[in-house]
Image (cartoon, rainbow, N blue to C red; front, top):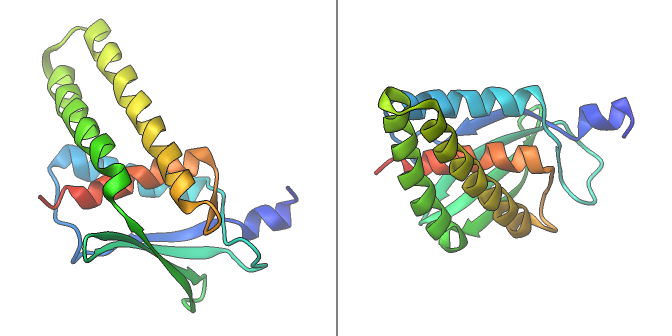
Length: 161
């Protein structure tokens, strides 16, 4: 990919709809901030058959559906995609449980126990990233690492409780 294409095919802004999310605990807020920072540092994101970019992304929940609102860098709305959360429900539930175990473990467990829990957490995160890529197929082009970070933000929407 040429440097010009790489500069175009990326996100330069990511926001979460404040009405869709609540404030999480400090660990959750930290994960959310890291995910946004990591996405903006390095990502691959584009609209198929559109020679524009870079892009801004706003993620929200609308009527229990995940909404990706994509705009140009200057704020012009390009497209919105609404995705059912049903394919994510099991992995979100499992990921929430393993994250709770992980946050408890980092306070009191042995390094080996923490590593084992974290391996499970990474595995679920990878599974969720693949589900997201499948759901976005034909709508948005994202690489695996960007999909992983986007799942962190999708999970952040779930923290509203």
